[in-house]
Image (cartoon, rainbow, N blue to C red):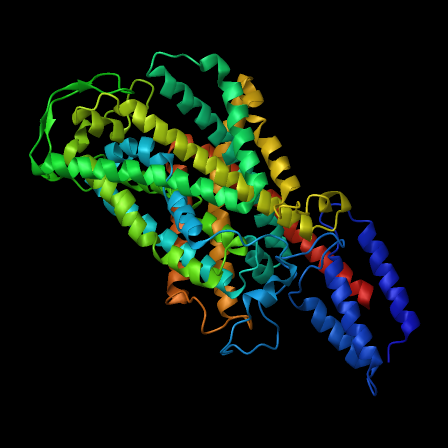
Amino acid sequence: MMHDGALAVAYAIIRRYASLRVWLPLDRSRVENIMTSSEHSSSESNANVGGAKADAAQASGAKTAHTQPSSTHTASASSRPAGTESEPRDNARIASVESLDKGNEMERGLTNRHVQFIAIGGTIGTGLFLGSGKSIALTGPSIVLVYIAVGAIMFLLMRAIGEMMYRDPSQHTFINFIDRYLGRGWGRFAGWSYWIVLVLIGMTEITAVSTYFVTFFRTFGIELGAWKWLIELCFLAALTTINLIAVKAFGEAEFWFSMIKITLIVAMIVTAVVMVVIHYHYPSVHIPGSDGVSPAGHAGFDNLWNGFSFAPNGWLAFLMSFQMVFFAYEMIEFVGVTVSETQNPRKVLPKAINEIIMRVLIFYVGALLAIMVIVPWRSFKPNADGSFASPFIMVFRYAGLDWAAALVFFVVITAASSALNSLLYSAGRHLYQLAVDSPSPQLNKLGVVSSRRVPARAILVSAALILLSPIINAFPKMSSAFVLFASASSAVIIFIYILTMIAHERYRRSPDFIADGFLMPAYRFTDALAIAFFVFVYVTLFLAADTRGPAIAGLVWLLVFGGYCLLHERYQNRDLQEALQ
């Protein structure tokens, strides 16, 4: 039997070892769980030393939760495993949301209406309004098939996230499942990498908001270029305030942002249908954002197949279109982050995810087809600076709406604001979770919620880093380096998606799996298919000069930071075993 004195000495040694760690320290929760298990074993009658050691060794090897580092924090992600080791795989009942929510400090203030429109907003970004012209020019009508293919893969990603979130809807982020099923090393890599990616993308979005805002007023002859820094500050302050008020305020903002985007897309599709039905002939017009004058033509389905070629600019260009479309769908997984703050999540989440395919068909495929039946796809030509005019502006101008440019740029401002709003929300939740799980007392201070039950400190820190964008843009050398890091961050997202699919496969083979959940169909095949596709997209990044650098930088980040996290976990586990002997 392990004596209390020996147990106290071992525990003191481990606690002292843990206190020496500052960055990625020894997992104190794992130690405490082991010691609790050992104390229980020592109190049982007829227990022997060998049995106690075996129990401790088994506990140290198991995937355990991370207890809350201080009394002011209630851990949510890793502190509540989705199931216990003794839970049978064919368990007919799933744990209630209420029982899982005992440690969830945040408010379930998002309704079904909020989540549905948040999901729509996450599907529709500025790329559809401004970037689709380049993808059409690159691939022609075949771009529709690319959007469908990539949308189907992203749907599989969402089903994987949805199944795990359905199992444990108290999680603040899907990254926790990487931690749970792939180990602390990969979990830390994914957690910190994802938060950094969110901040970097947020910096690019705030720059985009100010650029579109200046362009919008320029259509009315008002020049605001000198005030871009103030515009960025005002937009960021407004969106940060919305996120600090309450999660319901965030949901309402996203609802109206999404409504504006949907209205423009539907209006454009209806306009295109009317023009096709009446076989509308339009004159040559100047398109704002274009260097020249677009030729006269007519609306009709023959614009789709006249001169059709599956890969009109070669197969390399066709392959490159996959990465462009992939990044247009980037952050579609955001709706999964809202689960811990959603009312009745097990009813709302499956509905929101299952409707992704319909949204892709309507908002992407429908919009692209509407554009190409009005504007012949060979009419999309790059400007001198390599940019393309907005297809939405082209359609409305051909319809005789001279104010089309102002309308589209207003909606683009809305889309960029929606993206920034979502990034602030997501970055705040991810930093909060990192702080809650961290053994560092300094970082723990960010793992608290305000009286309004939002992670205010984590949101403010994320917003402050995003606010560095105007400062960086003021210095050309810093700006060039930032562009590289921001581009590399998009490449890192692919690694996180791959880890998510692997975590889902591990979940299906773990004791946590329940057969009556929101199941991914044919998970062995679909998980492998999604992983293969993400690898394919990453490989395509090496095919062009402008994406090769970010792809290499992303690999360096994986090898250096990922390697560090894995090695640290390995040595941490070794030291833990030695301390227990």
